[in-house]
Length: 301
Image 1 (cartoon, helix red, strand yellow):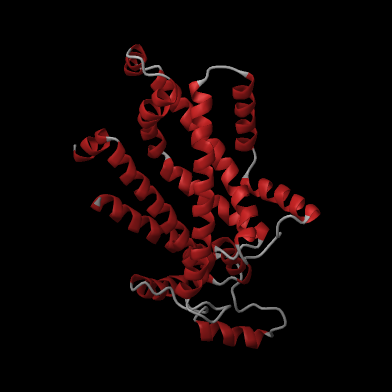
Image 2 (cartoon, one colour):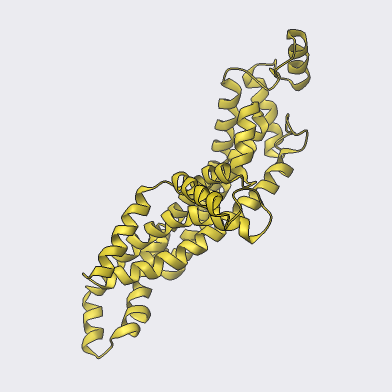
């Protein structure tokens, strides 16, 4: 656990540092706003410390970041932690809702396709799964956005209630549900082919009891093993979906920070995204260890 937590801290630090250095090294800076004269740009650079060497700017940022203070946003004139905290809560709501929907759809879907070898329904479900896997969340969001704009059934942007959450949630959840279906289907098929399952059938255990109480519980461990990667893919996809649907999360905030070259805000958003990924992977590993004792034995070894 201590090793995993230490790795998570290092991951967040490296991602935030990389974002900060890349934003500083790119051409132009926040002081170069339209309508400013050269003298005004020079004065603004001096006021913000942007005229100092990159190494010195990074060292100044690092001293504050160690104390969990990512500085003040150039554009919003507010603490970065405050801005990122509000956006991160919105991203967490969206991602958690999409993950719950994807799990509720993908797991039963995978159990069904993995427990049956053939059939029209199974073939259709697998075809739908393949299509959803091939479509990025950004494309799904654009298609759903077009449908919502033409029908008027759902709001096409913003954040004002549950109805505003439906469109970005569906765009994020469908590809993840298809991924979970493929993983669950393969794992279920492997479990049903084991000698222990054949022995359970010989003892008279059939139907839903065999499928859910015996087969699904054994097939769950491989799913949990990759759940951290699924969570990471979900958060990375949410950035694009947030921008398209105008959801006020980390994606929209990161885009604004990049457009105006707000380096401190860029680093803060990158750190929050890395933290989500690290926490998701750590939580998945913990649940995997609780479900499968072999993981705990391997970790101690």
